[in-house]
Image (tube, rainbow, N blue to C red; front, side, top):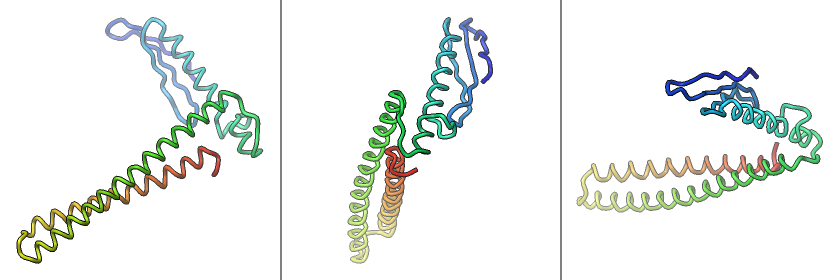
Length: 167
């Protein structure tokens, strides 16, 4: 971690920046205003504190001990952050499931539309470009359904990981 860099922008407002490496990520924390330095200092302290609690690479972190020992007493902060992560992943999972249901409905509609377009074309009452449009719509709906299924599987895996069911 480097020191805080303080400067003034064109308007004369203070700007403070600190680069921090935590959570396996290089971060740039930036704040503006008369208390910019203190804000960046507080933010970097909080980021590093959370990293100490939740890192899988720091042997003394709550999460590392939990993964290593299978069971461990974790701090209230770690428990709260884990709870927030699980709640977020549940929301993502529910949204992914709803997207699968919506795209399935769209696919069924596109299939029916294509079926009718083919019948009308065979009867000679529909031009080729309209059938091609129906085929394109079906292909798009099918692709969306596949993408939604992949998102659903990824959301399920993320939820299982957040809940501690897989490592």
